[in-house]
Length: 257
Image (tube, rainbow, N blue to C red; front, top):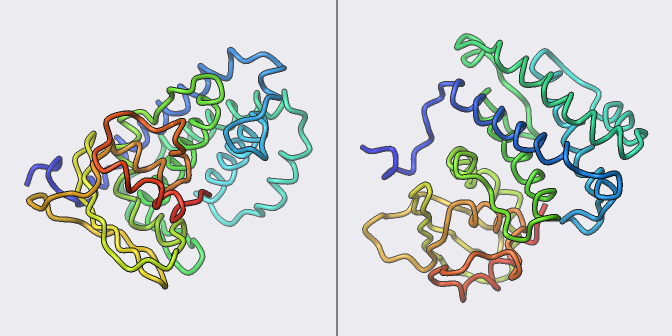
């Protein structure tokens, strides 16, 4: 089956995933290096965070991700260290932390992929899934910075292609029941996927859909990813979405994280 016509996960080969993470880090660096001190201190997309706060979250996340590749880590100690930095250091040090993490990622082997496991609450993740979650974090928070200065910013297609298949897992904690009991069929492009979103009074789930079936909502994959993350408000929603009447309801289901 053509990968573009399936709902299966991508090949677990680490190479493409590490390369996309590298490209994401470079995009962020290209933008951050152009920011003025005033822009670093400007409010970012999350209303409670400045751009420096977002970058500090990414920088500490890079450190934690790298350390977890080699063992346990005191996450609170890392957060405390980054919270104590001034905004200019948070911005600059994030780019260094991304570079150090990327250098470590390029040393990973197929044997590492097969043996490494990571506890995430009650769930145990394999290495590719663990790194896809890092990509999810890096991509969305990079968007939080980019959209602060460009209201038309979107998630890059190469990142969306690797993130889209993590949505069923993300929705387990991102979705908030609203009392509705119905299904919504969703079709995405770039990449092509179909899903069934099950809204239930006690939970929200996403499962592979039927390509032959009519869809209730059709939108770019990057927009669906942002919707689930609470980043598809009306001012940042692309034009031409089929079934856009569902979005107001779904914004309540996905208030953001």
